[in-house]
Length: 87
Image 1: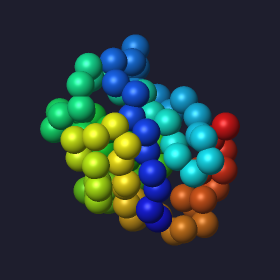
Image 2: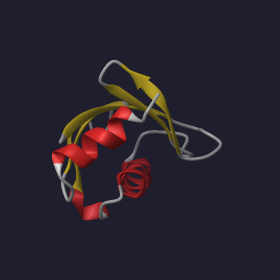
Image 3: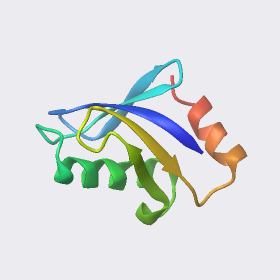
Image 4: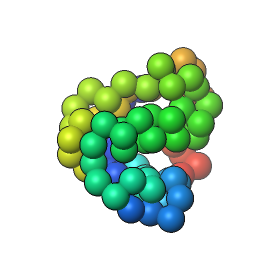
């Protein structure tokens, strides 16, 4: 599954804060978008979608707040169910 992520840096904790259309909004604790923030994001998304971190690949936007991310390791239906539960 390929999803779009809008990263909100400098959060109190890593969390999914909602969805606007097809864009998932995720807060991360890192103050700026860099390799460390991407690692934190990948780790958190892996935990959120219950896949291994190697199953998450940032396809576009490594240095930007808006990212295109590919998630593998679970069926499309399972991932869609997780996405549907995001307010």
